[in-house]
Amino acid sequence: MQTKYKVGLLRVNLLVAALLLAVLAIATTTLTEALLLGLAASWLVVTALLLAFNHRRPAMVPWQLLPGLLLAALLWVNPERHVTWLWVWAVLLMLPQPRWILVLEALLAIATWWPLRDLLGVEQWVLSGLLLAALMLIGLSRALDLRSLRRNTLHRARLVPGLSLWPGNRLTHDLAVERARSHREGAHAELLLLHTSRHHCWALAHRLCRLTHRFEPCYRLDPHTLAVILITRTRGEADTRREALWHHLGTGGQGRAIALPALESLEAERQALRRQAGDLEVIGAPHDA
Amino acid sequence: MPERRRHSRRLYAAWYASGALMLLGMALWLYLMGAYERMPLPAALSLLMLVATLLSLSREDHSRLAAYLGLVCGYLLIAVELPRQEGLPALWVGLPPVLTLLLLPLGPAMLLNLTLTPIWLALLGNMELERDMLLGYLTLVVVAALVPWEQVRQHALLRATDPRDPECTAVGHDTLHEQLANEAERASLLGQPLAVMLIHLPQLEMAEEQFGPRARQALLNSLCQAVGRCCRDHDTLGREAETTFWLLLPDTTESGALFMQQRLAQALEQVNLMETGPVEARTRLYRPRMDESRQRFEQRLQADSQRLADG
Image (cartoon, rainbow over all chains, first blue to last red; front, side, top):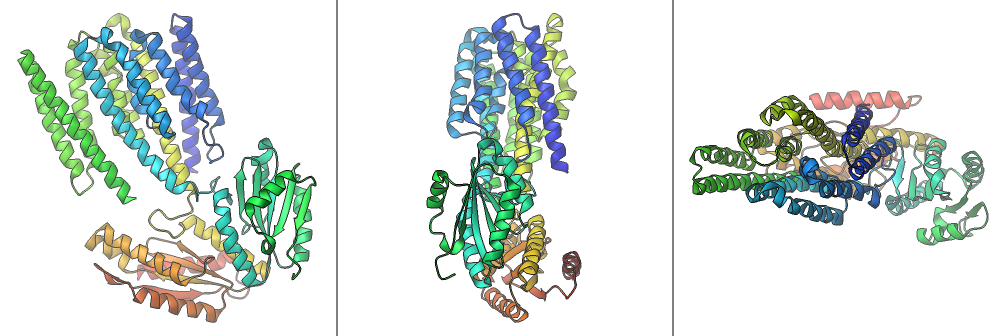
């Protein structure tokens, strides 16, 4: 509840920031600056619209590059007017982003600070450079804190709070555990792989979580592929259940069900799924079953 | 996690120290330039930064106090130096809000930034620039705050999606209850027995008070490791409360659970920690009664956990 509230507030803040930038864009005199500020405002609006409280999309590289590039452009085009924004470099480093973007932003910060020499006079130029470097170090240390937390957590965290939808890298381990467990319990377990278009995948994942039992974990292997481990008492039950599930899901793509005893390599099955012509193929256990 | 905090604390200490050095250098520079009346402020502030450095290095957590000291230094320096700068006021007005956002958590930082707005603008007082400057300043404050916001969101998201307890490898409270519901459903569907072992670590509270956080962590780790050694992969250890844990044992009969209880007791007996000595654990076994709904079973477990924790 409280976290939802936070996302709402962040969205409001994004929109207010976009509004203020738009006002600044109108107030400026030259077209280039107005365009840059307008672009920044629209970037914020789109970010506000895409914002959601889950791990659905990792931010894409061009998307993360844009704020840095816009800031640099603004400082190059009219340093006299926008020089206040120089300090934002320190804050920008706090965002979780790949290491090379951090390096690039640091270089851009130097490249935008360097030309200010004539504008500021040597004494202030040196002072501001030192201060900026110090601030950027704090920003960086805060970014590194978050980054190590993300690295330690993301591989095991669910994709949506409260939903049994897990990242694909857990599947191999969970399959091994489930194979041993269902063998002991004498239950029938099978892996169902689903392939669908990128566009439908997220909605399908939600439907999959809703239509399966709570103890059957779902996984997102990549933007096209979902997986779920289905557990039933007998093989016959599994067949009827799978048919019904397939009918209700309406995936619009391919599906492949593999009984866990028959599963040799997950990678091979994923490739087979991609090449598969039919709608739903079932790979049963070897003859002993 | 404490490792990480210590690491970043050292980084902050280095930062305050370099701030102190910079202020000292500035005082020296002013002295050499012959501006004697401007010299005392940076010299005094460098002492303040030195205090901040020592505070952030100290064993207890004074990081917030150190941050405020650093902030006060920055503010005073800007407030005194700025009105007399021949340079660009537009450059310097951006520094205080960014410094605030970097040193303080988002909430206090925003509050401070917005309250201080009139002061900065008055200090930089330049009538015809006023309106532009105000707009620029506010935009900067709002836009720069987005980045800490994103960090807050990421932290909250990781907390909400991480199945693990923040302190140890057991699963967290919410995931534990979900897992119990899952296992109960699976057990009833497949017609299998389910057992839950309640584990209470009475030493946990005292350990921190008497021997510090490391002793507490050692206790938690030894429990998680002992459970890892003697349980099957699909048994789930979860943290119900500060000192109580539930161990979910699916497909386990009464005798199987008793056997597991013995093995765990033996595994814990072998552990002898440096500060707290042998690990003391009180365990009890529970099984859903006939016709007992999952909710009732869960309530019974919770009530007994509470009673056990209260002694």
